[in-house]
Amino acid sequence: MTDIIDTVQQQEIVDGNGNPDILLQLFDITLPGYDVGASSGNYYLVNGLDDSGTDQVEFNQKEYLAIPIEISGIEVNTSGAMPRPSLSVANIPVLTKSRDNQNLEATLQEIKSGTIGNLDVPFESNYELIGTRVTVRHVYLSDCNTNTANPAQFPSHTYYIDRIESENALSVTFELASPLDVEGVTIPHRNVIGQYCPWHYQGRASGFGGGCTWRYKESEQHSFFRIDDTKITGTINAWSSTFGQNNNPPGYTPGSIVKTTNSSTQQVQIWEALFQNYNKNPESQQKYWKRIDLCGKTINSCKIRFQGA
Image 1 (tube, rainbow, N blue to C red):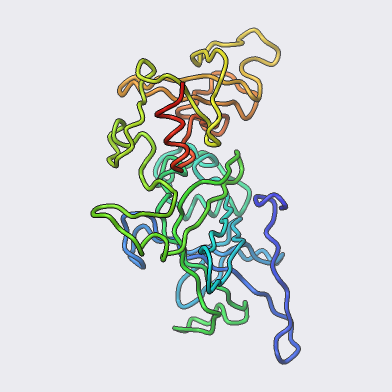
Image 2 (image 1 turned 90 degrees about the vertical axis):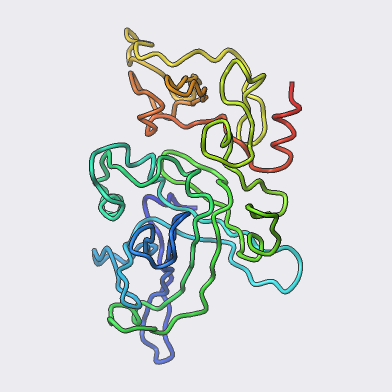
């Protein structure tokens, strides 16, 4: 796939009258804990536009902001497992660390225009987006910008963000689950989604709630694991603000692995450098780092951590 930050290609089509048109994907995003359509926690996005310079469209009397975003794997099955599409989007938490009092709309505008700075967003990491409701609409550009209610559109699809498939400094790919997966079978107080864990990793120990009791202090852990359930091996030194001060260039090289310990919670996290950097704290400057001690959110992941050596 072409780098999603660089471009999102539109599907050019010809309508029944032989006129050229463009098929757009629109995304209604509802963050966890917010009501659909409420004034807060809801965002409306479109997967980029043509070369005219337009950075948003109006549809159904809502403004959809153009950013790098796309979905793949949408299927309609009458039997077998429910499809689990992939949603790729600009890695907003990494791209927007941290400047004061900027909202998500301003952040997305800067991503689209290529002038992204260190801006605040309403979530610190992509893991906080698990449980987000995503409604995908397919519409013709000719049906946009009409300021009419209930314009023509193809049948919409609604999913929930279930887990992170992959992540880098520019983009993140989420695995989506059908509402039938997350709403069909329940135990009191939590949803059951097949083999996948619905709890926040280290949630109970970190004060986020949920049932995951995997330890977060170094003295309590026997091992650290990656999201693919492989053990992180070798000596892991604590991050230092002065490491490599006299190197040329100074600091950590891409692929360097360090650990940080939160001064208030004593939570230990393992980080891998994405870029050459010096005196860039992984906890606050995640543009330069990615956390690698993460859970795969499956039953097998849980087994490996609690039964591992």
